[in-house]
Every structure is written in structure tokens, then in C-alpha cells.
Image 1: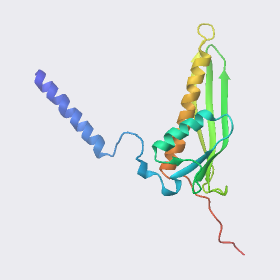
Image 2: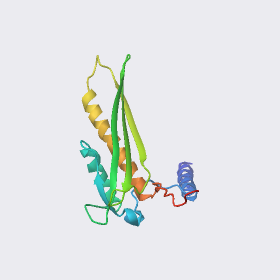
Image 3: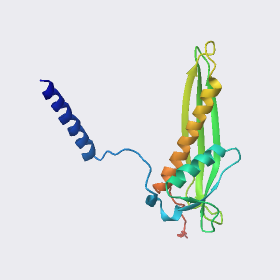
Image 4: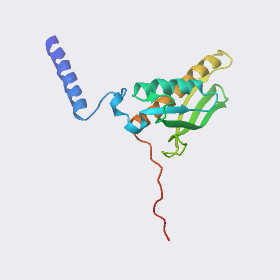
Length: 176
């Protein structure tokens, strides 16, 4: 009987695994370097002041996706137009802190002309604590701020690698 239960567990596990593969499920991972669109293989990052952590994370994720970062003459520019961190405090029996980061970016050519429409991304995290018992607010907040910035950097690099940025529409057709 014990052998039958083991065999049933193995068959069930294999059956479930086969059905996941059959339906197209796959684990999320880094895209191979060859999937970056050719036009975005060379990028120059232009970010506002006080965004060092975002710059560092973008360097990591874009380089891992196969993007060459630098000041090359034929490089496009990834410009962060808006960087808006927000902290919202909700007081009650417990204090809840909501951290939100909104970043708007676009890709431009060497002359500064937009190539893609501006794209706005948001990420948020929240945490609670009891002021009367524990005061770990600063440690937890700095950790979650890094997580939010990392999330935004991953979103930007995935959208560039997947070529999901809408191009600027040029109006060559002018109606009389």
C-alpha cells in the first residue's frame, strides 16, 4: 500500500508538470541578450539628480538584457522625464506607511528628438507598525524604497527588451 501511494504521488506530480508545460507555462527569468531590439542595443542613460539607486539598478538590468550603456555616437538616449517618490502616512491603532514611486521615461535619438511616447510606470509597497511597541520605521522604509526602485528598473528593462514602447506617430498626412 505504501508503494502504491508513492507511485500515485509520482504519477500525479509528472502529470501536473506535463500539463503546465503543455499550457505554455514557463518560469520568469532574464531574457537572452539577443532579444533586445537592434535599435535599443546601445543606450545612454539621462536621469534627474538624486536618482543614483535607479541609475545603478538600470545599469544592472539593461546590461543583463544585452544593452550596451555609454556615450556612443550611435546610442539612443533613455531619458527619465519625471521621478516622483511619495510617502503617505496613515495613522490609526497601527501606523501604515505607503511608499509609491512614479517614473515617466522615453527614448530619444542623439539629437534629443523623442522616438517613443512617454511611458509612466508605478510601483508601491506598504508596511505597518505600532509606534508604542516597535520603532523600525526607518530601516523598513529604506529597505522598501530600494525594493520599489528595483521594481521600476526591472519594468523599464523588460519593456525595452520586449520592444513594448509605442513609437511616436509622425503626421506625414496633412488634411487640406
